[in-house]
Image (cartoon, rainbow, N blue to C red):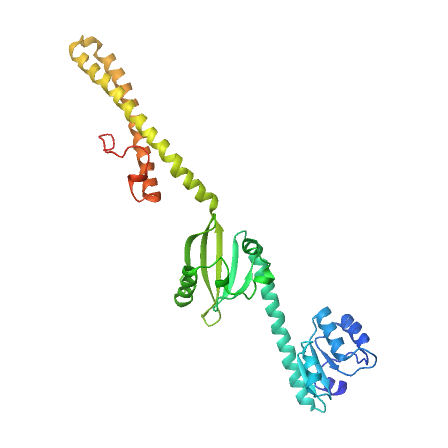
Length: 324
């Protein structure tokens, strides 16, 4: 077998006859593939040696054996071999099995590397992230999402998103719509006493078909609580400021009108001084007007974004000349 493989272009560095030596040399030489007979010299079988080579070094194994009974094959399959060839066999058949095994192993390695890269990227983002396939099964999550769901990343992998508090009926429908239309989804949702901003993004394969759905969950509880505080306390303060502006306006405009009356009766020589003071007072009034208008704008913004009507707002809701 060694000579035939060398003639077809393979490098076969070593042949050993026992499991212990096979394991040791596999670790030293790190071959691309191991051909393993099930019956070896010594107490260790080829099946046991293959399992250790796989677990320690991740090297693919093909079994070569004259045993074709169901019991032996079942035991051999438990070590997850990349092939099982029954003796006697043709050299060409073995070459085909070897090429298939090497290709499959390369694909598995590429998949593991891609998953490792995905996991590394997921964990560089502080927000909670989960990656789903089209069947709504979890492909990967980052540590933040695992902590939110109070499960390990390993336990979450393969779970249906519908079985987790992350999803509700609306979320599942959004995932279906995203798979069908390919349009990202953004929204807010409440889970218990916390609020999250949830975004869903499609990920496509080479043919442009959506193969994965990335869900990002950003905790906005702090912002929501601030908004509630702003709504409850800020509105009252703004209404109070508006009242103060209106009162000051009234208090200033009344004596201003009196001064203007005195101007008409007084000595014309004092007119410039009186008008100077009137202008100063009027400038103050203009500044107060601006402050009142700005308060009204903030009030209107809060009313528009946090209330459906004025009925729940503290303070008066009126229209005055100052607003105009």
